[in-house]
Length: 107
Image 1 (cartoon, rainbow, N blue to C red):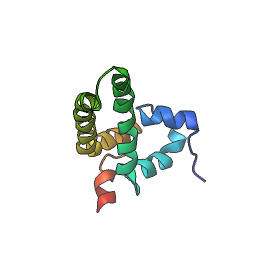
Image 2 (cartoon, rainbow, N blue to C red):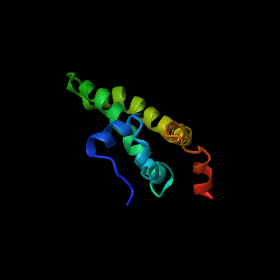
Image 3 (cartoon, rainbow, N blue to C red):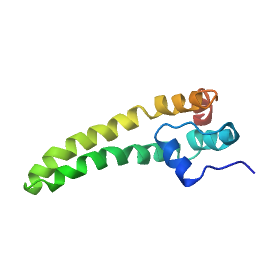
């Protein structure tokens, strides 16, 4: 059975930390398996939401709040989606795996 990361390791891994070599199979499955793009998008939807959330505490109308946050948040999600392959390739090479695995799994 392949080693799986603890909750704390998963959180650190989600935002750039390298996992031990014993978890390479798990990393490969996470970055190239079914749902890899969905997991990537979920991971990268959280930080901009946390950063933009305090803007909703300012006294303003709903329209102003939406006008302040939605364009920035939308742009962050678009960039996360567009760069997901690049980032997942980087994560594979960071863990000592072949970055071309992304392309072979898509075929």
